[in-house]
Image 1 (cartoon, helix red, strand yellow):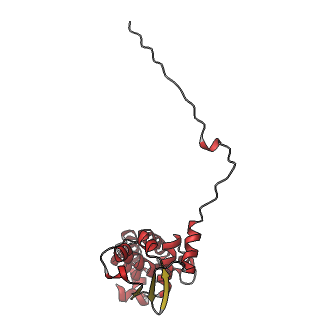
Image 2 (cartoon, helix red, strand yellow):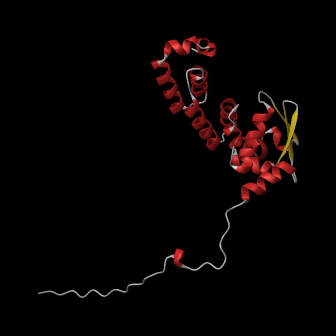
Image 3 (cartoon, one colour):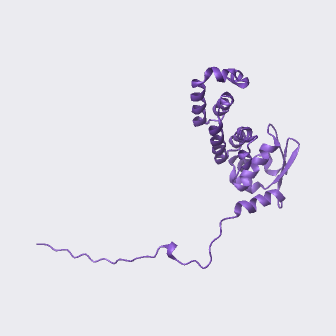
Length: 192
């Protein structure tokens, strides 16, 4: 007979949550501080001119959140040395909402009852243009939840143009089940 003797040491560690906290750690307020920085424009090193409005911002923050801004401001593009950049083909409110997202990681404009869907439409285009993938996904989600007979055709066009495959499949499904109703809408016939 062969016998084995196994010797081991057992160490019991106390879970971190069992540790009494003498100083509770507050929630992060980074988004508030960055939002305030955007709002006040302190230390801004670039001004965007969009539809007659100007927005002061910080190249480093923009570049950290957008690969397009990274190339523009820290690559070999002309904008690297510019302090004023004009943005064409975008509404000022959309650019402002995109900047707010870049600085705070939130887009409260999407939650507005009266125009949240329209903002989501335009903001998705802006997010795709500047490579802000998280914002693009948030906009897709908002549009996905709100697509209906009246908006199916225009949302399908948007989804196709900006490679939003899940949104596109929802629109195709809705349109195929309600083709006559969608075609009867003002935008539906034109878009289809």
